[in-house]
Image 1 (cartoon, rainbow, N blue to C red):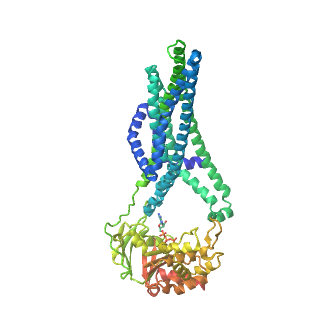
Image 2: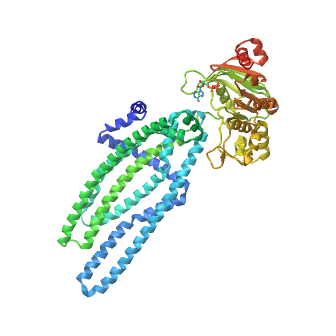
Image 3: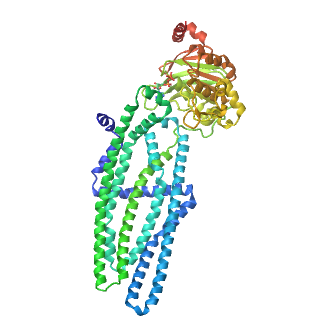
Length: 633
Ligand SMILES: Nc1ncnc2c1ncn2[C@@H]1O[C@H](COP(=O)(O)OP(=O)(O)OP(=O)(O)O)[C@@H](O)[C@H]1O
């Protein structure tokens, strides 16, 4: 439990807000509620647009059936009254029993018809809502991934962004339809309510007033718990993300090896359990309190309706109203109370839906921060002017130390650059900046004579083929694993085969049971597992698939065996002919062939030149080169 207090009591940006909530007076709560109305209406309008765009016909169908249903209860109650009165008359006036029996039969037939219509409308309404719900959830998911795709790299490195995404995925998918269905049923309740009031006022106006007032406290209590529930989820979202991460750790193939060998299973499972216990107990407390409060206030309503019944029954005994009227009045009074309660709780759940939806719309409203040029300079192929970094300094968000400091170098078209340096020196950062995953805070990067900010980022990236050190092992077919290197050519078998030959992946594929049609990875049926080096050859083929002007390989041979590495580098000149090639490597044997070598240390270029120049200089490069060469002797 120590772990709990340490992990969970961490200050959270949302905690303060929710604790303030506990101290609010009724008046302040009312003010907050009234202030939230415009927000809820805006949320309603946005949801309506979303749902309507998903499927206008179903939305219309749901609206129509819901509204038609509004008039069923009053009609049923009125028919009941007529039926009862006819029964009483038939008993009283036995001479005209035949007439009344016929009337009873007609009324009973109408009642049956009404019930059938009601059940049909209910069925349609439920069907429409269910389908609309599924379609909207899928569309929200689609909008989310489509939107996430437009956002800059930096968003994905911010934990608040992940928290919001997580919250949206857990809570916001079904809310738009719930909001709309809630609004329709609100209207429905309002109409039913109106029709009942008409029936009720015929007896005593003040009975209508009592029925109206009784459910108000229950509504306020419910809205308050809705707000608390939302606050709780918000507060927990960091921890819930950690919990999802633990599940992922324990259920994903690539983590299993290490988890088994270090015997981490029980450790992570225990950690998961602690999170779960904490969430469940918080959740339980809230649910119990919410429903107990609902029960308490609901009892008030029940007392009022019993009182009403007693009053009207006494009236019936004294002959002031008929037996039919007695049932009508008691049913209508009940219905008014229920409807009014439904209307109020409808408002409170709309308020709750809106809280979750606002997070969804917040995420969807995020815009990329990296500016795109209004009139981009076209990127000419082939490059004639190479690459230049001019005094580039770059800080990652939230970091005090720059990852790159005042980096300058120049590379001609067709040349090869090698970047060396210790772990964390900034090598990968440098190539990420070249691909404009981030913009540097100072300095300029030029590609083919223009600042890269003048190009359209997508067009720039089309000319860059990168295979990162932590390349992705796509759980897709072998040919797709290569083809996605240039996705518009994914069906081009000749190009895929050529790329595979260049990286040596063709030999790997030749040994696979279905060749290019083999599923890779173990996540899906008949997936085939590859070794680290085999995966790397697939990733390299992906790089060669792309006929980009700049080919960047971040430790491209780290997992290859000595022979494969040698073969690749023996052909590297030919493979990258006419293009700019950039390697990041810790192996000096591969580095020495480069036209230009940059030695990075703590984000700074401390030496640059060809292998011969740097060796002659006798500096850091020469020292590292000799160090590595001696270990091979
Ligand atoms: N996304 C990120 N957010 C914040 N800091 C980062 C991020 N990526 C890298 N860094 C930091 O920037 C510095 C340079 O990292 P970089 O990945 O460029 O090093 P590298 O030279 O490629 O290292 P290696 O040889 O280990 O691959 C490191 O201190 C690292 O912690």
